[in-house]
Image (cartoon, rainbow, N blue to C red; front, side, top):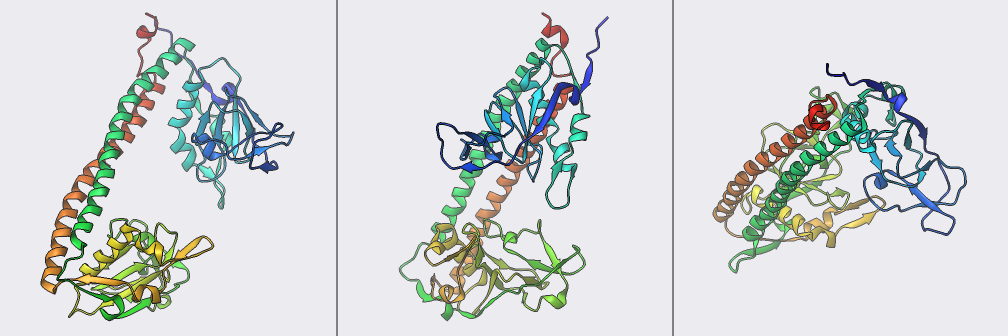
Length: 392
């Protein structure tokens, strides 16, 4: 008769000790040890050290788990030093394969990360963690399961690497499309932006957002994508009385304030319904006798991808900005309206093909992540490795 593998609660497997706040220094000394933070769990070299004597020590055989913050549930192993205050040390009480238990914790990351306590700063619920049940097979089977997981993950990682390589090539191709479209031609006219528009105006600080779907859509910098499109994934709405500046069809919206990687992203607004827009954004209304609004939006976004705005942006504490005065004097090269239209159509046609390929790649990456979870699920249900293979 086949012996049934027992299960154990995690409180039987390891004991938990929270990290502590200590005085830290930015350089290693004779009497210091590394201070282990979240980035260290992700594989980065320690940036801070401590000479304090009272700390929670981690040995290489210990498992470390983030207990506080948005990364709650993240695990790491093979580290020696003082455990950071947002991290807990899980020290095994039983003779057990460390990778086996680490993969189990990784498998439960989503569960632990979603089911957290605390309204301001998320926290792992220690009681729920310690009451999780884990299959407790022999050490030989644990090792076989780990090897089977890593064999499957190696194949999966190779596929993911190839897919991400395709993503990078598509991003390069997008930039190449814009570069080719807007390379200055001899017969093109060049004028400052202020001579090509009806007006340029800042957005509005709307105040408090309301429940999604119950107010006026309010665009923020996050709603302009890196390729110059519009994303409605993180859309916010406001009471219309708090948003007295609107975008309408034919307007261009420019991110004028945020981090350096956001400033300069530009898109054309081509929907019928009016929307509000943030005071971190600038609205540009073109002179239709001179410019196609989609042409100008793509041209300004092309400058963003070139890194042009870094030359004219002002840097503040945690933010950068391009003010209207600096925006107005940017020189814009442009052909006739009919040629502008042809350029826009060509860009959109090529971007449409890129979008379709990107969707396939993203779907494949999502499938790979689901497969990763399925591998772990199978492993901890005892289905990935058959017992007779272990006992051969």
